[in-house]
Image (cartoon, rainbow, N blue to C red):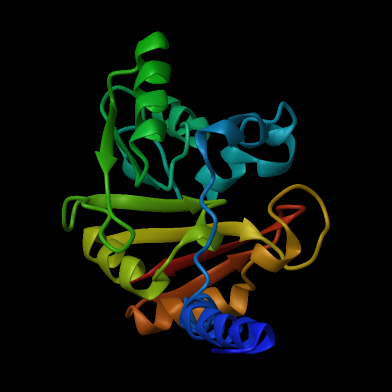
Length: 221
């Protein structure tokens, strides 16, 4: 017959054997970027966003105008989508792409309520935006780069969707804690974006510095 202390030691040993693999899995699992949830729409739609996001200047920098075909990748609830829609006019097309059906549903309600007929919603995957090849004049990834799981893979697909003269713009928050945007540990430095883009076969055309809290990197094929 085992002494009570021996039985306790045996139970502890078994518990350690069972728990250890779970702990190891937790340590080995790669960190996954946090996606903006539909509940975060109040943050994404902040009333002062027009002031610091400067959508008109961004669209000017990308030569977006009447009849342009553009894509808003990681569109969220469509804050930038509806501004693109107004800029390209009835002869243009805006692809509002996201990986969350709830966000696309919010966009559809928004554009229907505003009577916009030039917006097409697209449900993509983390590595495939599912956009048509070779047809898009400008692709924007606004405030969403830090949420990408495999950025180089997605950028490679986006590059395939551009026209020969098309441009891909990445707009996201500078590292640090200044201004709006995600927590400091979630932000991605512009140098990292350039490395990912190079792996995807993209060339940096220019970097714009007029945004107060964000970088704007413009790439081409």
